[in-house]
Image 1: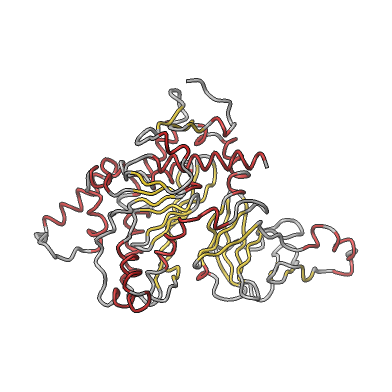
Image 2: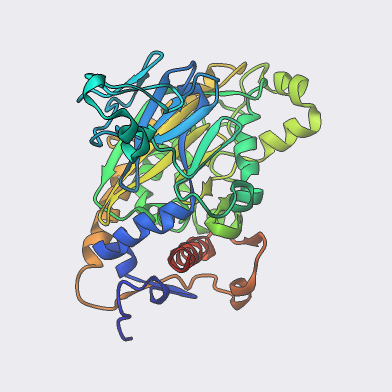
Length: 441
């Protein structure tokens, strides 16, 4: 096959394969940093991180430093984390409390909690009328748009574009499923955030979140070890209580038939839910009194809907992958064409037993931590793929598994087998669409 004229994004995605430049090209990464991440909605913070006015968190989103702040009136604002004077980052700590005033550490320019200018040193030496008219005198710059859903805060960097609800649509139900595991309908970030920088493209990681074929081979040793430890203990009788680590690792010993049958649903704009029939999390034991507390809060029907639906992974493309059980979330932050930061978050559901937080922290440690017995398998292969794609050979990456031409014209949610690569194709079609339409705009 001939190599397309890189880095034209329109030529990089075909119905059943993707060109390697989508992963390895620095030019493509620079384009998607401006176009794709400017046009899509990305997660930036959770409300529990911002308990009072002046509370803030910082992050970098596709090369833009952002400041997420609880403003004086209680709403959450998102600004570019740069002083209007010379561009200095106002805050470099991961999180903190600014007090009643934002203050630049360089020249001590100050701003109110709504970003408006407050004061500058040596004020009498400025032409105040000229300063107030120029860009530097306008205060901090807000991002294009901010939206909040059940405590999860998202931004669209571009001022104009697709609306929040139109972008996520039905996929928001999976945030609801996670939040409603709290009897009060509130979650809190707890247990620390585990971070891992990988030398691979961010799209490669998000593909793997939906790849159920790889565990059989990639994680074979971990699954077999968990199974062997449990069987050697002689406590495999029906009804025996699994230790938490075994409960979380044993399903990785499952075969292709198990993963094929868990089924998945893809939604427009790259979102998906994997494991809608069952998953490796379906059989977690509920702590005493927990189900009763949910019934009292949400009713019997909603409780059954919450507890009976524990997908393997739900992706709100392109920034987060969540698990309602065990209440964990991964946040994907692109750093370069070949470097990605992945964060593993744990949540405590307000009003629920502490065991649920313990289970979340345990899962992040066992499966997503850089020191886990599973993540090192994945990271080794991600980085191997990143290196391999830069070598000579076929420039196209196959995504043919489960391909159906009818999916090309589908504009609604579509169900498929758990092992289908439709989930990956769905992501790349969304990527291509936003890359092209943003360029046209």
